[in-house]
Length: 322
Image (cartoon, rainbow, N blue to C red; front, side):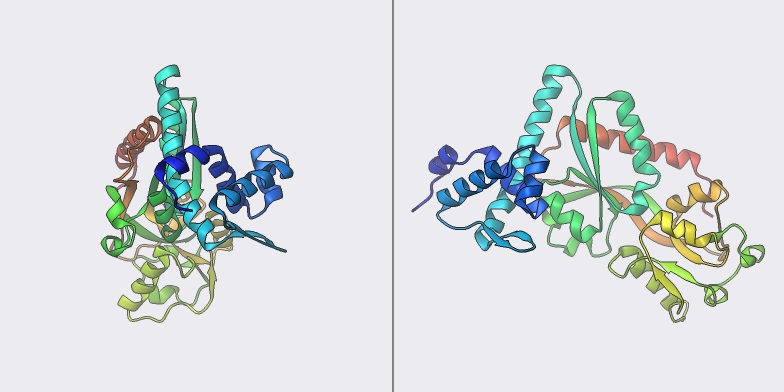
């Protein structure tokens, strides 16, 4: 059977694609049915209709759930872009008929979500209480592909050093928000806080909590030790959980490397204190990434404006990093 644009448009329904995408996200027909408020037989019927139309299986059913066949991967990859456009259309119609409303999906690194994003969300809710904001936290290797296909509208995080060589970069643009520095921190009662300045070598004998090896911040940390001609710490916990890291540092021994903005609010609260290493530690630019092939909906455009307003407020509020 040869497919044409007309034949696909006549047979396929957006709702079938919504269900198929949810089944793969859930990894289970039962969980997908629960998420969609449908019965399992109804979900199964919709999947069978899709498979019958394409005359090929789209799912591999196993004891641990369902995964996509090669054709299923192709279908869901294109479906995500279509569903992103459908979400944008829904938002724009709602905004036109009811005022500012809609749904914005934001991807972020943990370091960018501690201060800047919460303030941007507060500003958004002040202007448009009806807008739903969904936050997805992950690494850039997960978030960039999601942004490229429309699963998220914006991504806020560090601009990678290899950004222009990444597969997704031709489809994405970035607006730099600010240049981030790093802080080496510990609990406010750490015994070395009375010395100034100190070196990384002075801190090596203490336990460290470092980011996981797949993160941009860990690569920066490794470079920091290499530039000081030091081997990385031997006593290390790897964690990207800020709450876990703050708790670990309350032993007044554990040391951590954190983005300046993320650390500052805990320093202000008296939970942490930064070490004076005698010079600023550069992390890189924090930016807002967006698709250059898909126009932002009204809600996403408003959120981007709020993000820039939050950035301006933060630059006025934060103390000098010198």
